[in-house]
Length: 217
Image 1 (spheres, rainbow, N blue to C red):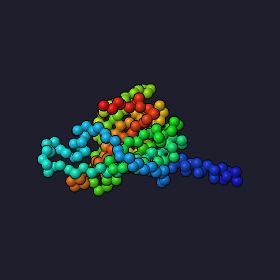
Image 2: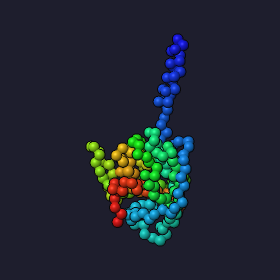
Image 3: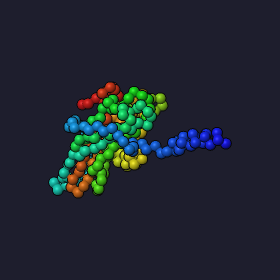
Image 4: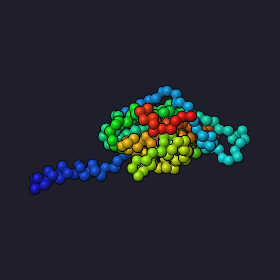
């Protein structure tokens, strides 16, 4: 009987640990990295700018012009599998307007998955919220799947973004650099507050795998 009790004591924490909900990028502690460099200029399609400014078709009057305010944005990289992210969990604070993140600085060569979270504080109390993605990653086939949306492809991902950020964030895998093909590009954020529109961008790239990205023109 004593041996059975001892076995249960050892086994129960394993069961409880297995049932624990994976928090995704929502963890208690992060290694914080603050970026002070001004963001590089990012080419944004005119249609995207119109949508970011919450303009509607035919809105041409001067009174419709909105104040564009460049705002700060935070990015979180949190490993799911040990050894994938340098420091396990990293919070990158980008300056007003956002910036570029070289993933080779934070992602190890270890195969596995990690979560990406993005937080735009200006979304709080905003009457309008938009999130867009401009792909800068080339399409490539790995096995039976195609990764990467192609060069300069533009998507409205607002609904999907908020749904994923509310749970675990964007989960990506490093095997054969899949994460670069999924994240490679620019995320655009816009929050409307009265006549002000707060905007920021986050561009993901890799200085070690430039061939996977589209050439700049």
